[in-house]
Image: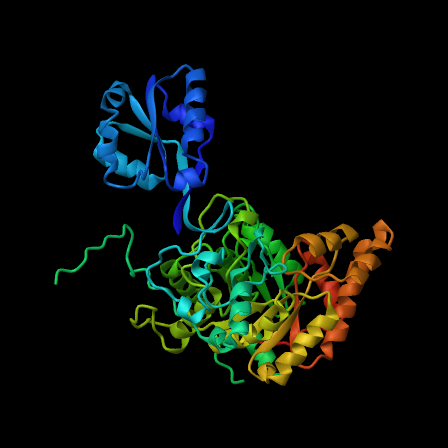
Length: 217
Length: 313
């Protein structure tokens, strides 16, 4: 399953963003941020305690099931009075959740998390970015591994000179994309694919900000 | 290989001389004398001088402007260009700028990752990769076209090179990768610094077995070691660098004050041995912040005097 991977902002940054706002309502998310332990029930409780210690009044807290779902507005209606008393909503969800809530509720929203990437859960407590939604997929020629995402330089025509025992030169915890591609194609007996020249990428695939409407029949 | 540009480096190689190139890193400031002084030290001992492009991702005077200083002194520059810092518009624009000063050599690189440099929080570009940069220069030179398809008035005349690292893993990928660079348009290659001669010779043999040495001029890269500390650093800390234990030991067993001299001895011996390796067409001497040692290395390696060939303008 794809997951939005988040990390809590430094406490000082959260304090700065909440500057001048005495009353805060905290919203967590029961999906990705719970899984990554950045915005589940325990983290929301810990945030409540931390803010109370700093002298903030926490008017209430909740963990919505899926912050980025349009139904979040209905769920939050239950907390209307507590939200009304608050100067700001501190949201412990990814930026999709924060923006969904910002669109639904007329209140200043403060993200408590940074959204790092959209990733895949590849093991217990391990998430990897495997697709960066570039809009022009080339993995049919790379054994199903995306070098645009998995190579730190996004090289599409083979590895750089810094491969370090199969790891990336900038992080020995990360596999070299082109070593993985080489090994996969080698297993499949399709190393010939590495000879293919990939032309400069078409960044017009879907220019940022992406927008898509299902064409009418 | 027929001569396609007015490059002096290309002419020297095409005439069958062993070419000698070196490199100068531009200063971290705007003083033109910093780069001119380095060039002055080595200009009579090399055929062309590479100017690095914000090497190790540390911000410096631009490669293009330093190349122009060299060109105006009558020294043949090799413009190094990385794809890290420019998109395809800026790349084509800088190539035209270089061509307007009749800079005739270019080395196409992807560039070190910005996390190694002085702006680790910066964004890299890599709109093109080194392979696509090679193709772009060829399109501009041979077809006189921009990437967008329009005609170029007075197309650039660049002798086009690429880097190769025979030592990065997986080793099996390295010869096919060179073949791909040649197919993309690399006419000369400057290699990563060579300390592991056996491995380099194994790579060269694979290249000759595939006949690639007849399609590209390979300049073997050498860097004199200044100290045992530098040897250890290169071995352990520089990704893709292969410094064998016996080289580290030889430096470490030398008294500290004699280590610079020993480093140069190793460098000269390396050149001597590689001269006879089939497919090696010259040497790229990268004496990092040690340019004053280049003349001595060139002389001792029997590569002096350099052939006298007038650059076309």
